[in-house]
Image (tube, rainbow, N blue to C red; front, side, top):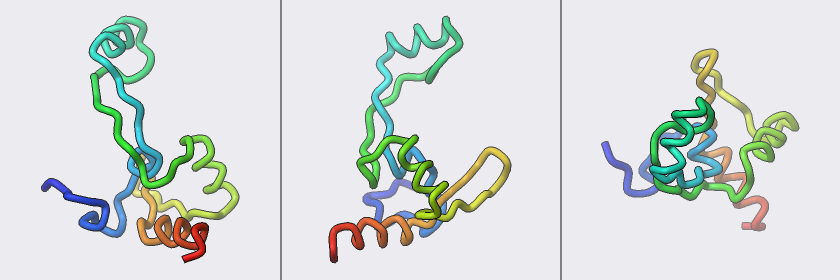
Amino acid sequence: MQLKSTNDAPRYGRVVPDIVGQREVTPAQAARNRKTGRGPKRPREARAGILAVSPATFWRYVAAGTFTPIKLSPGVTVFDLAEVHGWVQARRGV
């Protein structure tokens, strides 16, 4: 299933890269990462997130109680998309 916009997305199921975006990884960077064992091992295009903050800042917001994490398993945490959009609208004064 391919989503046309974030409005088409399910209410839950947004992981941190969906919220804060991801940087591009070029094929050369991915090859170097495979050799060193660090960083993303596959090339990927950059993608914009819902918020213009770093992952560290987003996790600070979580620690401060701004966003409520939903643990699906020990390694998977998702966030309520309506909560994130509501926070953005409140910051804009809408």
